[in-house]
Length: 114
Image 1: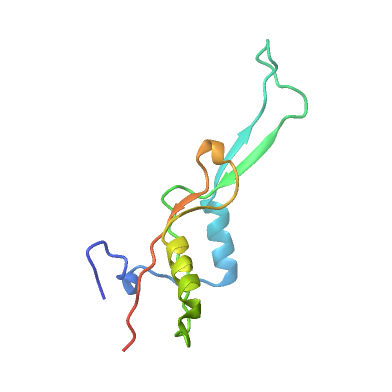
Image 2: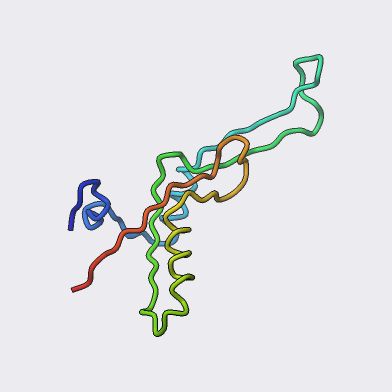
């Protein structure tokens, strides 16, 4: 099951983890940044302005299965097409849009069942 970009080569790339192992992997895999605000005219900390940010590294690949039952009528066709369009577009999860964080590039891959 392979294609030109390797997306369908999942059997060679996936690992199944327990919940605890997954939590530990997520914990060590997050990108963490601590930020402070400086006073206007000095290079000293402006009181109480300490904050921490966490983000997934930009190379992170997320995978989730989804599907739809066959349509019984054509009435749902527009909603089905809209869902397909949304899931193949760029989406943003989380905040910090001003820093360009949280944007995802999405691809829906059809997997044929035999």
